[in-house]
Image 1 (cartoon, rainbow, N blue to C red):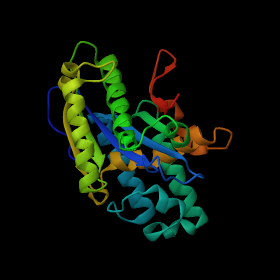
Image 2: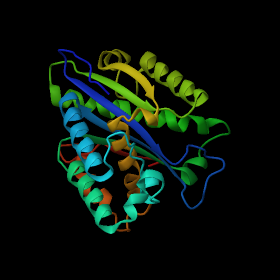
Image 3: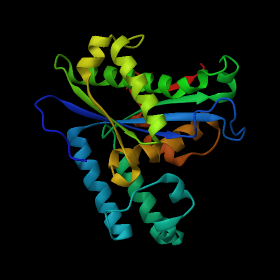
Image 4: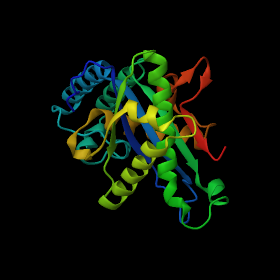
Length: 256
């Protein structure tokens, strides 16, 4: 993805998910849905893109491969080469080195505990789970960039991975509603002045921001679902979760 040229401070919010948002028929072994956002400045996005391209060339011999966490975990498709112990160690070591860099990007996530939330929802409300999560990600992204930039008005371009025409249209409608009414803590005018673009991209487009969101969504979800488990992937990135003066603002759990 080519960053837009602008005199304003530009950020990108890349959004991916872990699990599905169905509250009425869900897997009791994985009763969660996480919407994970990666907020990154234009400058840092260039650096992350270069670092991941170098790693892809080193391990796979091409930059065209699209990182997908579930395929990585199962050594599936192009990731079958990770069955080699030495290559796998280099690959995961490279990812950890890139993603563990403090302040390279910011994590903002919203995790829905389906079993608990379903007790409070009336029939038909489950479709709002994705929208509610999106509202949180947008709100906290605005908090972060406003804290970072100060008096200057920054721009945030939101990029969401495509799920399907029906689902994407529903999410776009929800976003347009947010632009009209704002959120609990962000007015409509403030939201409109910060968010400059909202668009969808396919996984095959090889957008590194979406791939990073995909990589981080799963360990974030597992951390909240099973905090007692060893989770090295989460430990490597947890310092990048949005905090303000020691208060954790970038990791929402619904209901809470």
